[in-house]
Length: 260
Ligand SMILES: Nc1ncnc2c1ncn2[C@@H]1O[C@H](COP(=O)(O)OP(=O)(O)OP(=O)(O)O)[C@@H](O)[C@H]1O
Ligand SMILES: [Mg+2]
Image (cartoon, rainbow, N blue to C red; front, side, top):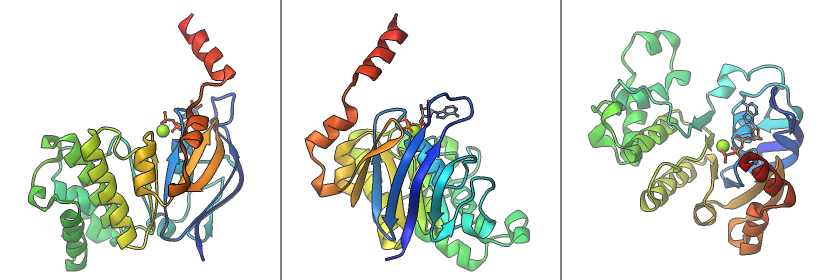
């Protein structure tokens, strides 16, 4: 099977950091799979998602996304970028624009420049936007300004914008961290189902192992920039979870230093 994600011996340190954010990471994800990234704060989940989105420079190792090798020195070409959609933890919506306009923004990478800047959307783009709005249950909110919406509604807009882009790879950084538990499950179900029904590969990060188990095919456990385990979701045990979140001597010492 073609691999949507291939990572070999990847290492990376942020410029101002003295410890690496990612160290000796190996990971391969098949087309159409849903992967969850779990791990404590600072494990490297956001850094890894940013890398897969082609926004990180200066890493070492081998990374290929949707069959195209990434370069540590430059951004991927525009035509490749359009195939990857990113859902930000803080939504990154245009607050004073309508829901429909925000979702249409997801099509910008696929529309001609002139039409994107000046024109009204082609029927094809309008139909894709309509389907994304309907799939996310926000068709009735299409004309509302985003700054009048609740957190859960905004999250639906962010997902609809990503789906309108028709990405082959969907990356979502803690997509439900701002929501109550019932709504978090609803929205993660919506996102993973929309990805599967479109044949996309989806990678989401989360702090909630039960959501990862329920909605992902595979769970990747990260800690201190390393992959601790990579398991089918139904094979994840409480022992695995405990190993991921346990306090080791180094973390306890670091916390004590902060307290004193
Ligand atoms: N811009 C940055 N500059 C310097 N160090 C950074 C930067 N962003 C992240 N780091 C460091 O890189 C490491 C990994 O951070 P990252 O944000 O990827 O973790 P995370 O798993 O997403 O954590 P969280 O669950 O809190 O979101 C941490 O040690 C963090 O302090
Ligand atoms: Mg993060």
